[in-house]
Image (cartoon, rainbow, N blue to C red):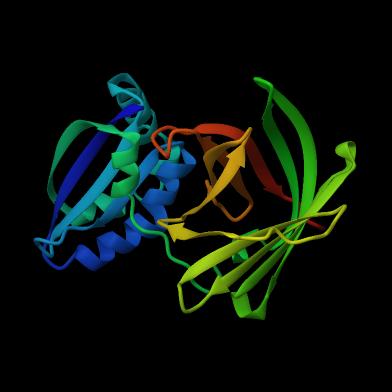
Length: 262
């Protein structure tokens, strides 16, 4: 699948590079992703200390225009990081190119793992599921309880779907030497950990785990993603590629909402 990639290059005011990077990573990029924007990369340029790159992918030119018009007119942007971002910028240029999904994935920053990455998930949650079955989306509700352990090096999730009489456990362990998270799964009926974990980590507030599997006798790639992370909500989705990672089809989406106790 071919998409449109926008490359925005900022020339920053002298001495503002560190502050701009902090604002982008902590405020602007999470805000963009929460609004549904695919942020491919946001990082300093290698050639000049006062240059910064923001790369965003869109299905097409029309979607790019609609997305940006809505985002830059939103209260979340106008009342949020806009003033601080604009104070750092001297000038910027924008280039737009067509790129295949495989190239876009290569341009994404490599994920990394650090203690506490899954702290956002600790607590009690209600989950709205959308799962693709036989070409139709199946909608149902679930819940989860998550505990962080070992000073942020481990996270244990108990997933429950009462209406389907289903439960399971997600176990995420940080390999400190590799700097990556291992993601295991155990079904509540057999309680046997998956033989091999999916490996991944977080980049700019988005976590991605890729693994290989077999479906109907044919090799496929499976991707799990954590994004749209806020203090009280987040999203996880799974996608499958049947062409070696050239294209992806989402087949399971979970919208998590934190349950607060009085």
